Image (cartoon, rainbow, N blue to C red; front, top):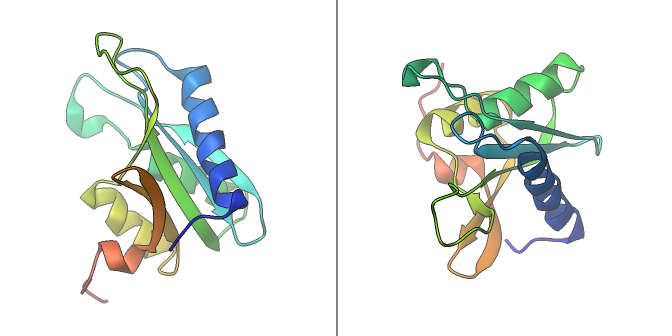
Amino acid sequence: MLLDQEDFHLIDVAKSTIERLYIDGKHHIGAAVRTKSGKIYSAVHLEAYIGRVSVCAEAIVLGKAISEGESDFDTIVAVRHPDPSQDHQEIEVVSPCGICRELISDYGKDTYVILKREDKYIKMKINELLPEKYTR
């Protein structure tokens, strides 16, 4: 599915969040989620020296929205800030990891996820990224 202006705005919010809060070795992923009510929340991930303690930006942004009383999610996007040593310094949309796919589908089975495919953005329902998910 192609993106609309609201989706491009969501990407811009995620990018501006990581641009503003980027710290090498601490925060390199930003995320933004739009709820079905139209509110947008954004956050960065928390890096830890012991990797298993790190928390993805998607988890933090969902928690932030849930903490504000939101529970119906429309679209989510994550972006990655490049390391300072990389030649290419553009912030790029990235696909959620497997754990985040599980989390997004647990809290919003109809949520769209924005992805970058080649030179264009698309959005897919989370259940397309996590097919045949187990059920409770």
